[in-house]
Image (cartoon, rainbow, N blue to C red; front, top):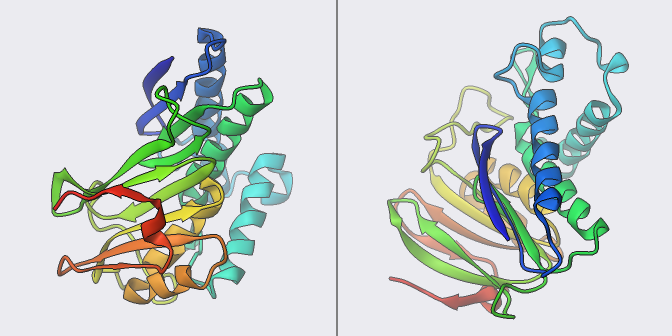
Length: 250
């Protein structure tokens, strides 16, 4: 069973290959993403994060989920030496941590229902559990940021998360938080494989902000691998990345 819906400003796909899955199981996952969007969207004036940015709601009075996201963001800021920061010009944008967190929680909903073979993907970030319909690990393509229709690497993963930070979909939008006026221009794509999508997503965002040195940051993290493409088209990968690749298209 597979469905794709537009939520959180992006296509979200859920596929469950366990035979006992029914429509209501998928509906609950999408309902959760709709809840996350209503709470954390910076594009909706009535969202909880917008109320905080409008100074109409104090963080101390915010929901438990909002306070948790702020705590996780602060933890990530400290773990990345300030390269991850949701604060900018007196406002907050937690999208760099919310998407991976939401996918992670959506996958947990499926596990709680007893499903073991599925994936949840939002905007290119994926949590893949178990195996696909052919009984094999899930196959995930990494796009060429210069030729969007081309796949440069194919990953074979199970019970892992894969997140990509890049400029080829939304354009140049990622800043170095430690030098607020400076866009990151020397990197165009950074893919991170991690133990789950929450961890992969938050560290992919921070590592991208580090520029070319971000791949060295990923190399030093236990349980993570990365694949960076810079603005000249040169790729740099961590020492264990290739063990997850199956096919490579030139």
